[in-house]
Structure formats: structure tokens, C-alpha cells
Image (cartoon, rainbow, N blue to C red; front, side):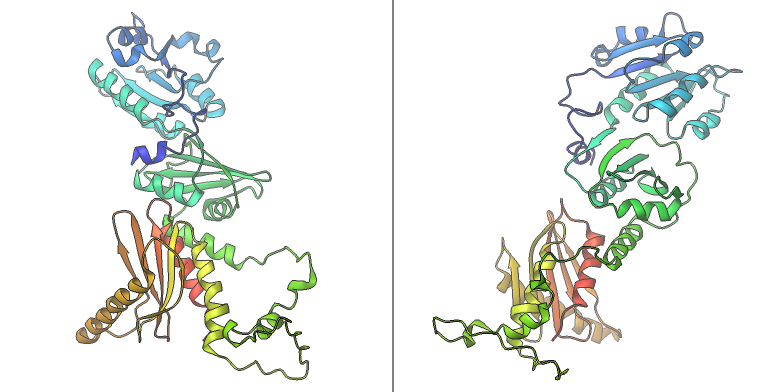
Length: 417
């Protein structure tokens, strides 16, 4: 999964980028003689390719300038904490710097440092081999930097799959904030404009339309403030977006009476071959009753709008509205497969499940059926009270499954027959 995340990290940001020519910069804060960083570098082919800097504890306050390091290795000595100045500096100025702390005393508890500095790797009395392996692993797992080519919901799902512990900085022109993750779960958040925290802040950040994203260390993930799961957060954020009224106004009055034009348009087969188009009839103000419904109206307007909206879901490859009483597709969109054949095949899937439920005495209705393939999701959403289902094919790499299922449920409520 790490490769999946690193492909989205900007080439000009962060040490995890393989395209960057800048060597990894490591600062060792230690009182050992000879200096620990130099000693390890002379014995490690891996560290020879890194920019290694040794800083003695008493010099830390004057050596914290210049380019931020990618990793800081702290030696925590018994009875004193010479790393305080460096930790404080990192917390305020180096949000993308990783920390690794170790103690030479097997009885020393490093919990205080974790509580102070957030996520870091802590080792108690490691030998040089263990310390070197931890440093190498830390460098290989660095994933801080600017994220490009992936939406915030999809990024959060990748981080959840990889069980990452870090912060996601979310920023647009008017607002910014951070989502704090612990082993892939969002545990806290901060949103600047409203000075809010917790779940409310997370939902506000998830609602930003096109934010810039970057990964940083987290200093606020030691206490779980947000109890909701990631899927529930994403679904609630999508629900809020759907319920937010649009503030845009039409630029032209042609859209003001869209229902009038829908009433006027007739199926293509009913139109005459005359060269001149008929004038639309004037709307009848005194007759509040709706026009008679015909299957063609549903197929040409409502179904097309439904399928167009379904194809707007992230990762959508194909969609179809299917009548499972006959196995016929009422409308299709997208491609890459024979959707008429898919409609007939998935009709059998729905019928088989209904027969099984009846045999088992299970009451109620099917909401949806999810079929997971190697590279695709196939979702069959069964319309409540109707003998129809909405069939959606999603690319596994680009889809957000939780949001797609929620969106399908919302779209199903718009179909009129």
C-alpha cells in the first residue's frame, strides 16, 4: 500500500519522493563520542547517501537553523532532557520532520516524550544494529509532503488502509485546518475559520470543494476526540453537501422554467418530418394537474439525468437502470462492457437473492449488493418499492466506496415512474 500513497506525493516536496535529487537530511542529537551520526554513517551504505548532521545537546539551541531535516534522532539521557529545545522547535517550525527517540537506559520511560511531541518512534536501550534498522525503516516510510492527483476522501481511505499515524493539512483560499490520524483513523481535527475542533471541524474540512493537501507530523493524536468511523464521517460530509442549497443564480432566464420545456419536449419518434419546428405551446396557468406520464418521458428525461449523475460519481465506468421483472435495461451510460448482457446477468443475481431470502424466511427488502473484483466494484442498488435496480461499475483505484453507495441511495430517491 505504501507505493499507492507515494505516487501522489509531489516530486518537489518531501523526502519520500524518489524523483527528488536532494539527499535525506538526518540530525542526530547525542552526547556520544565519537558523534553517533558520523559513527553510523561510516558503517552503513544506506546512511552514506544521506546528509548526516551531529549536534551536541548543549549546542542544540544554536544549531536549529537552515533547511528542516527529514528525520531527527534524539538520545534521551537519564535524569535530563536535552532534547526539549529541539522538540519545541520541531513542533513549531518543522511539521514535516519525523522524530525517533532512544534511551541507553533500559529502565527509562519515554512516554513523557510521546505525550509532548505526538507521534514518534521510541526505542529503549537499543543496540547499534537495532538503532540503525529503526533509522532505515523510518526513512523508507517517510511520506510527508504535498499530495497531488487524489481527493481528500480517497486520500483518507488510503491512509486508513495503510494504518498511518500523521496529520493531513487541508487548505483552500479562505480556510485551512488539520485532520489528525492515529493508525488510519481520524481521532481529532482543527478548523481555522471557525476555530472549531473535533467532529464538527472534520466535517467542515471534508466539505471544502478543492483543497490543497499535505502530510505532516501530528501533535494531537494521543487522545481520541472523534468517535465516528471514517466511513461515517465521509457519509455525513456528503449528506451535508447534498443538503446545502446552491447559492448560484442562473445567468439567463432560459433555465427558469425547466419543467415547462420538459413538458413540451416529446419523444423523437413522435415528431413529424416537417422542416419547420412547432412552436411550444404557452403554459396553462389554470391547470395545476401534471401532464399524463408515459414510459418514454421517463426513459428520455428522468432516466438520462439519473444515469448522468451516476456517471459523475468518482471512479464511475458504467451505469444502467434495469427492470429486473424483465431483465431489460431502461437506460445505460458509460462503456467498457456489454451493459445489456450485464443487465440480464445481474437480474439473475437479484432474483436468486430474493428466492434465497424467501426460502430462509427473511423479511424486508434488499438495499444493495456489492460485488468486489480485482480492479472494480460492481454495485447493484435495488429501488425501494420498485422492480428496478441501479447498476454501477466503479474503478477500484479511483472510487470512494462509502460515498458512492450513499450517492446511489440519494439518486434512487429522484427517479419518478
